[in-house]
Image 1 (cartoon, one colour):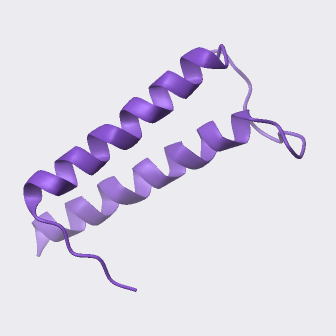
Image 2 (image 1 turned 60 degrees about the horizontal axis):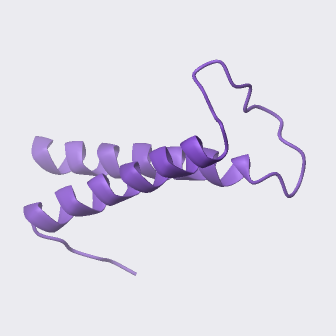
Length: 68
């Protein structure tokens, strides 16, 4: 499946993902010193990690689009 967004919607999506990740991190008490590697199954902090990976993938896609 391919999704195409204009520049404004790309920026809004990236901003929304970032805001959700920050709010979730605050709710879970995650800090810069939190250890988030090798989380046990079902740990809600795994969603925080997933959102970070998703955000990174979005940034890479947007940067690839700029380079083209």
